[in-house]
Image (cartoon, rainbow, N blue to C red; front, side):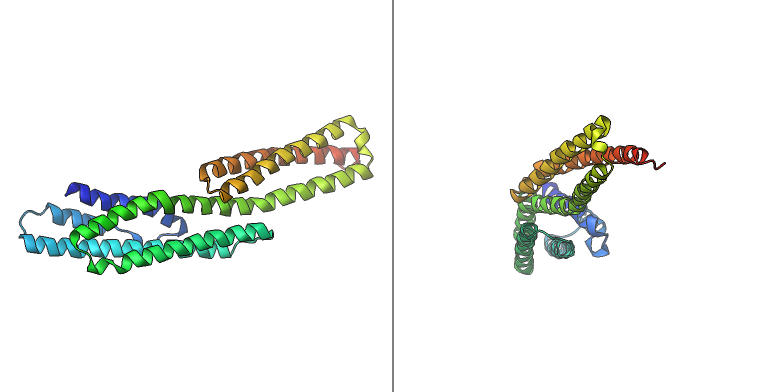
Length: 249
């Protein structure tokens, strides 16, 4: 008995962290219902039929609500993806690919939810167990990839800004003839190389997302941002030196 209730509890715990990223919904807080089911199962004073029907009703209600919230979670992800500012066609295709996977998850959740009312107690327990397994093996990895994609796409703007800034700085350096200044030339070359390395990691992160390798994608996104921060610091230093060279204080 305890093992079966633990399946329900673990299912809720697996689900909640991802749903909460979109804001709390009172219909998706299961603490009171889980406690009610636990208290009921611990009550030894009820006859078998009363116990069976009550447990059946509670499990159906909890599982049905979980499916409703999972459907809402996927719809929220679709909404976020659709609102992203995407310029590159290939990135747009990736978004469509992810939305298609989310629509498949919605179809899956709806199908399983529609079966709930006809299930026996054993059928409900099996459904909860299989949903937990599917969340761990399919849908949580999908959500992680989507989170990586959303973050990666936001970083695109930072990389575009950095590249444009480097182009502008090079024009200023050429106008000021400051490439004859070895210190400035070395600093500029350092910026170009570090930006190239950072951009390469950024692009490799996209490839990892496309391969659904969320751990690799996450690591590369973090590394590329860390490198890009160093690039911006160097750009700031070079800008100060260039202004000094131009007589601007």
